Length: 239
Image (cartoon, rainbow, N blue to C red; front, side, top):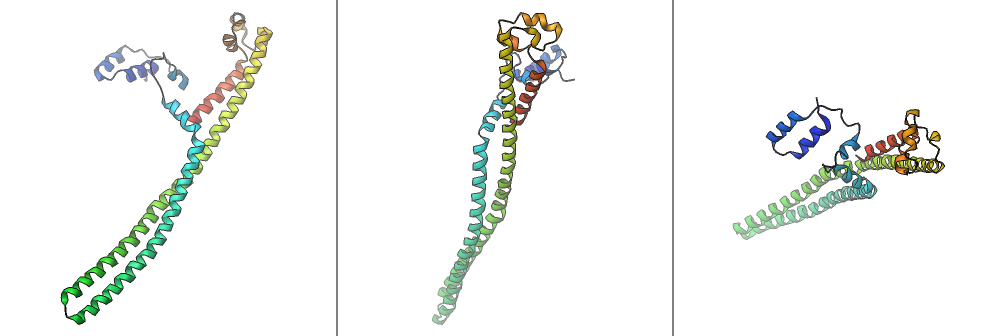
């Protein structure tokens, strides 16, 4: 059975496998963390920065997606244009190669075989360059353009993911702000019977009448649970 948080701490802290195995023997089985926040705040001994990086990336996703789409679209378009121009350039190579070949045939009349062979060889080289040009253009268009077409379509998924994240975050912030305002009003009224906390917590709640932060933990438990759920949902879309 996974030994949960203490197991995770030992695993992340200890780089020596033998020492880790010794620690593992002393770790007792516990009830695992209920959500990601308990991992993140565990004793303050381990720095977890993946979520912070994910949040930073998500905050910039709108700009990222626009640039992603723009670059992919540009490359796809220019790749098609390049193939078209490659065909035109190859036609020029073929035409020049053909004329040089005619010139090589003409040089036969001089009865200088070296001249004939030289121009014939030059004609072959130019025609091969034309073949290389047309194949290069087709290769780029068929592979590069098709790949970036896929990436251009993928950008739509990024847009949808960004929309979901923003909607979830807006919903969470709206209800969180509204809940805090309701709790502030209740705190000013100093009547714990209006807080909605269970009867067995009323005595503890009364001890927080002068401590707003502690008092908020007792107030409106059902609404607080709903807001916490929205916060976890928003965190899920962030990663």
